[in-house]
Length: 185
Image 1 (cartoon, rainbow, N blue to C red):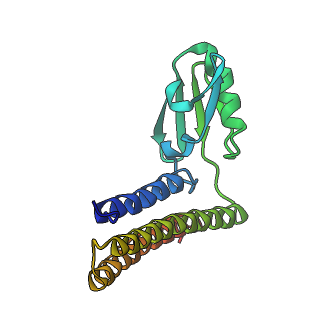
Image 2 (image 1 turned 180 degrees about the vertical axis):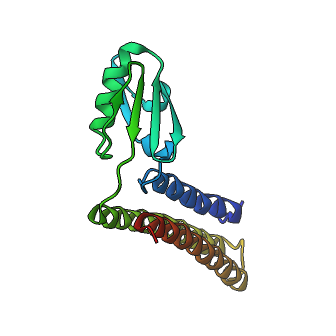
């Protein structure tokens, strides 16, 4: 059984791109998005739970989020969690519903968010490079075991590098698009 598994490498690299998309979805761009509240956890029933397990989040208007809390006794903790999440949002309490107007981003905040998007992209690229290194190590191990000849190993290494280059290009496209969206270009 060879240690090298092309499908596994592709799956792990694609996972890094998906994780990046998830991270970037949580960055605020001035438009309302339910993904904005994904990182929020609420302390209810003696434990920390993701917001989407205690309320329904919707987008009634382009610059407004609505959080419909299922249990009226949890409205206070949900409001507190959103305020303390560092998202710059001020909930308006309507009894069981919290309305979250999305304020305009200042130029300074836009630059901070664009920088953060760049950091997320770099983190994803590092993950992809680590997967590439694992693949190259597996190829060398297989060559030593006699699974591949040196020529086959080199051919597979070229293949791994192509997959890596393609994935990093995808990361650049996703990251650059998010930075442009944040900066309003």
